Length: 446
Image (cartoon, rainbow, N blue to C red; front, side, top):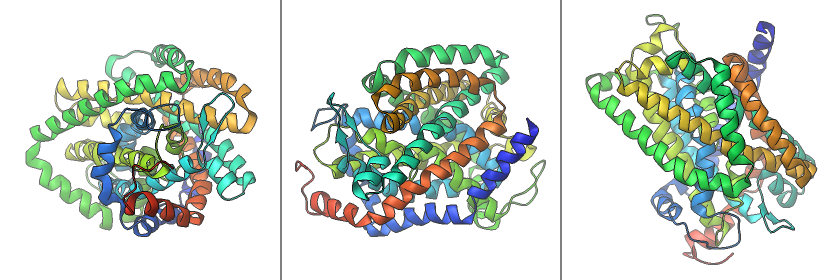
């Protein structure tokens, strides 16, 4: 087992080297400038996202598509992933996560736009879309579309299933001394009940669960920061200085270079907000929307809420505590940071992680099954769901390093085909944006 962990760690370090970081962050920046800082429309996008009425062909409302995407993105990466980034890259990793989110808004907008533009309608009337259809129909590269779909079907088990199940089972064992297999069984049953109903069942649950869990968690973090407000100036200083100069050894913390802060900040930023990964556009393609640009704006708010708000809050809470200097990592670090405040901190963390994890497992199940459907047809959906439910149990009892390293590797491999399509089709993205947004035709049917 130790040999497997070491091998996966080595592969993860290789795929998340400078070329991958440059491709990902470079795409964020390129699209930001190409789209004339699309981030300036975030207010309009948030306003659109709260509309629930049917606006065009699709399976779920724009709000339903957004909350399902948020369910998949706001997960353990926002809590445990942030702590893992701080433990490995120092406080400076928080700033790089945040910047990945700010610039990633343009990438999330772009991939959603292309997925709606190139989506297809099946014989049963349901919509299918995502980077695999963009690669096939927009770039005439079906071979690359197959590679993306295969990576998505596999990646889903890492980022969207086993990592999530592992995090909550570890936390429950730490907090309540409940065996991992017990919490695993409970999560497995709950997952089966919801996902067997398909996208409409998943969207219905997410529409109710996501707003509650996000508001509860953000308010909880604000309370924690207010309680420890006196150390906030020092916390901001650690984050900003560590982002560019690294963090020297302090207490039990071994220290991290600026390179490590950048590497872990961007890697965990992608893990959290999934901008550039190509996952969220799969559900964006199912939205009932008037035109691709309209849904793209709605989808872009997912990165804003996920990283610019939620991850930033977690990062401040973790760094504001002194627990990150003691050599802790993952769920242990998060638990220690939040429980510095008796009673309140533990409740916030437990409820937050429980809801985040469950919603992510639901959202990613849809991504994975749509990828499997693209590869093997509708007949693959039911078997995929069965294997998905079983993987929840497996993830609950695996060791943390194996699960995280596996997720990091598959994330990077999955992102590459999607980023290629965004760069090559950036002209199409600009054209659609001009027609519907810049020319004032956002209500136009397209």
